[in-house]
Amino acid sequence: MAQSTFESYLITGGAGFVGSYLAEALIKKGKRVAVIDDLSTGRVENIAPLLSHPNFHFARATIMDSIVMDRLVSQADIVVHLAAAVGVQLIVEHPVHTIETNIMGTESVLKSALRYGCRVLIASTSEVYGKGYRIPFNETDDVLLGATDKHRWAYAASKMVDEFLGLAYLDEFGLDVVLFRLFNTVGPRQRGQYGMVIPRFMQQALKGEPITVYGDGTQRRCFGHVKDVIQAIIGLAEHPEAPGYVYNIGSTEEVSINELAARIKDITQTHSEIIHIPYSKAYAPGFEDMARRVPDTSRIQNLLGWQPQYTLDDILNDVMVYEQQQLGL
Image 1: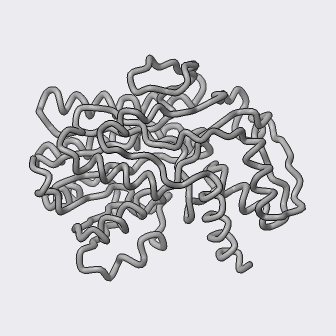
Image 2: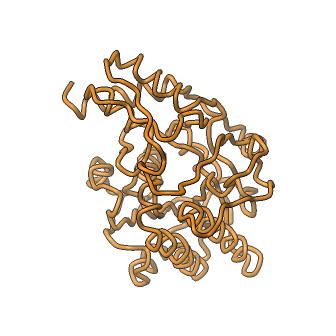
């Protein structure tokens, strides 16, 4: 499929955090954008500025609705599949929803895309690296997951099945499929209620509440700005050589959660204390976490020349300004 034909996009989960930023960026590029979202975790407020735009269309429906999906996919050149269970909190508390949404939803998207020959981008996650100890994580690394009685790993396994399924459609049917694994993606509009750490810390700090670190806080993460991430997604969507591979998307600037809490306390000039809550109380008994999660982004850099433009300080400042506005400060 020639790059010039990519004019119409369908974004599943497009009223969510990443999806809404992607929709905005594509509209600015002059693309036609349709969004399907059941609003279980997405919000109409995220796409409100786009609703009146002549090139934007929103359908409130689940991706499991085959009739709606067929109509929307028939009008698209590219499907960016972002709809999924999100956040550690939701994943631990609703494992059935997590597995069914991720696997059956992706199957629905691929079947519809195959019918009309659309290119498909499937969002996966750094969670698939599980307990991997080789740092940074490379797309070709072996995967090490925990036991099946730990619901957290059900999420990782379901996203791995999504990847297997996408590549199977490419190998067996010749469908253009691109897979990308998102590492921690943050920015204004992200909500903390599903376990996202930066908005949760920022809200606590601005309200003068205790900043609650789960576990001992020595776990280290890399946080990428959503605006950097969507540029990577758009680049993969339109590059003729992208299909058939998995791409890490994320920042390589690493920080411990204790350091993150201290930095947020510093920039907000709050008197909030930093307290630690055991994983067993924050999530569930036996909850397992990984010590580090750092992406090797050389594959996407080699293909697109992409690299993050925003630092962690940039991200924290952007999120602080947004949360101050939300709180009327």
